[in-house]
Structure formats: structure tokens, C-alpha cells
Length: 145
Image 1 (tube, rainbow, N blue to C red):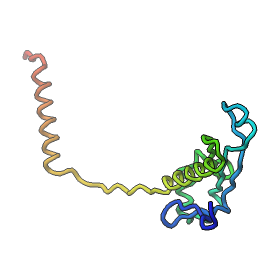
Image 2: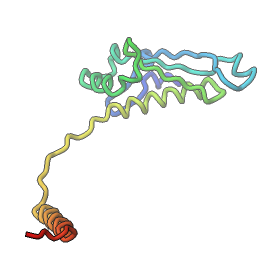
Image 3: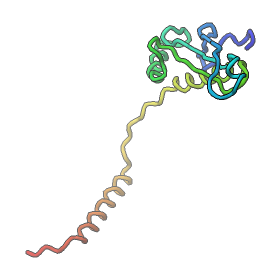
Image 4: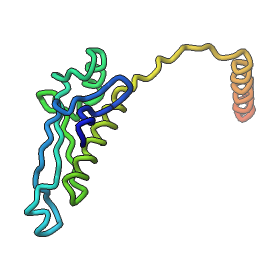
């Protein structure tokens, strides 16, 4: 990250200041031997959605709702990246994941506009129902009066 990258561009008009992010290097776990046990190459990025100034109030409410299962009790979103041996690559991966996650959460689906079925589709549906009814009618036993 250079001096010109003081913000993380998430979506058009939404930029997260890097000062709001808590970026921590932690030691990795799992297989990998001496390297993974001695070096802190895993990166954890934490961003508090409740206190951020990067989002408008409506955006904040929407993102809090969409990402509620991923937030802790303080409203912080935590992303951990540890798939690379390099701290720099893990940092880049964690920031990219944060960017994608928030960008997806900011997408508001368009409201469905209620429409009526066309006359042709209604006629087709009723015709097929009558045909099915006639087929079932023919399968019945004849009733003796």
C-alpha cells in the first residue's frame, strides 16, 4: 500500500479509510512446520460497521442487516487471511475479501413490480387444466344409476 492508497475503494461513492481498519498479524496454525509456527504471516482485518463514517445511515443499516451473522457483539466485521506465506499477500487478500464482501452487501435488490398475466397465458393455463380434468374424468369408472 502506498500513500495514495489511504482508502479502500469498495463501491462507487463508498471508500473505507484505512485508519478505520485494525490490521493485525497473527501466527498461523495448522500444517507448515517451523515457518508457520515462528512467523506471524496470517492477517486479521477488523472493521467496525457501527462506528464507521464510510457509510451513510441507510447503507449502514442495510450492511448491518446483510452481514449480521458475521459481526461480533460490537458490530465489528473480522476477516482473516492466511493462505499465503507472505504477510503482504495475506494483507492484500484480506483487504480484497473485505472489499468484495461489503460491495456485495451494499447491493440493494430492485423491488419487484407486480404484473398481470397476459390473456394468452391465462387461456393456455385454463385450457391445460380442462384437458387434464377431461383425462382424469375418462379414467373414472362409469357410474351406474
